[in-house]
Length: 202
Image 1 (spheres, one colour):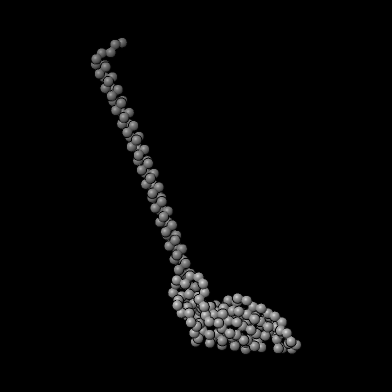
Image 2 (image 1 turned 90 degrees about the horizontal axis):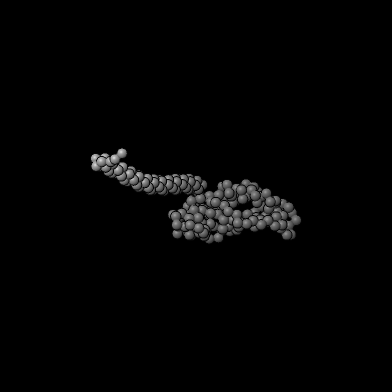
């Protein structure tokens, strides 16, 4: 079998067509790879942006919850009378009322000047404490427990007992005079506007 010039020309045309098809296929593959890489990069960027937005939303929700919690707490403290200037006259009357209510023998107390408590004082209101030294003869330890419970329940301040020592009184034979003595240091805590460090009484 012999090839003529016409057959050779046809073969060349076929080979050229095959070569063009191969080049076109290669270009299509390269283009597809570029599109895949671009799509993956766009997907990663979109996912990172979504994660960032989700993180911001979570932080905003957490901050909103914290703000609502603080506002509720502040309102409760305000309703209880903890917010504002200290009320030493009311505190003294409360101590006398508790003494009479539980028929305590005697309650002696002395307030120290108020002081700002440590911590973040950047807000409008900051915690202040007035330390009170309390001494009282007791018939039994339950008298002291009742006194402290009543203070925590009724005081227009937050009550923090720093310490309470109960000792036996020397030279007291009559139980009705109180054979025990309480010696306590108690903080009366209020929320006051920043910069107002001087105590007041109502």
